[in-house]
Length: 352
Image 1 (spheres, rainbow, N blue to C red):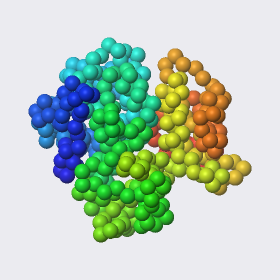
Image 2: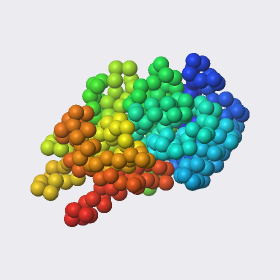
Image 3: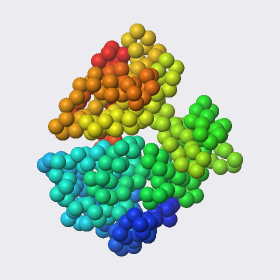
Image 4: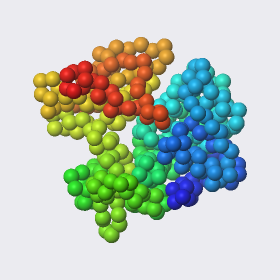
């Protein structure tokens, strides 16, 4: 309930950006349910928001259904004149690259958010070029109901690559990754800690796990998210990656999200996933491997993409191996499962 009220207060569209400026309109919005409602993102931001605001709710059980895939979702958006679309980056990428996307009118969408996974800035720009609708990245976790951050919903104040600002009544701190008790200065990278009315009380029946992720700072109870990032001087937060996904290359920290964002800038790449793997000659050290799905009709070799990366990222971040694949493993929500890719690779290499 707290999270619904926080989101409602935060959403405001500028007149110069959309045809229907203002906040969420009671009884007028059309929510299109492209994210499963058993997931915190789908149930709060689509299902419960639609209920609270007396909006029309369009159920899309499988957003990837249709021929070509995603055609059913595009048809529902067009036919129902959907105004609110909450999706994950993998779905936005698939819509942008859909061969028939130009046949559907998506201009009715005014509130368009991305969450549950990092949104590459290049993908957001491509979405807006193809559809003409604005796309805003937010952030949250199941433990936070889920929303804690979102970009201001206007062109003037949003920052591509950032998860935005903490929403109402939410306190965000960047703390040391070792203890989670020392707040770090602006600009320094550490673990994101959050306090607010939407934060969980704890993990049911697991007091030890709860104690591991909760800290008291300045008299407030903070949740340690497991996400690594930093905050700029205006309070915008930037996520490097999940703490557990960080790749240690010769003692240097490489974050998959940052590498994936660069790969998305390659005009041939539809979607990419990056993992860290132990080096055969030194298992205590890691290297970067990327899995890439090319856009329809495009061709490229791993060596070609590695060479393309040469001038765009530091050597320790540059993928040492690249696999060109037809698809990536996705969760039911549409989030790329790096864990599955890593487990499969470790099995192949005899580390499991």
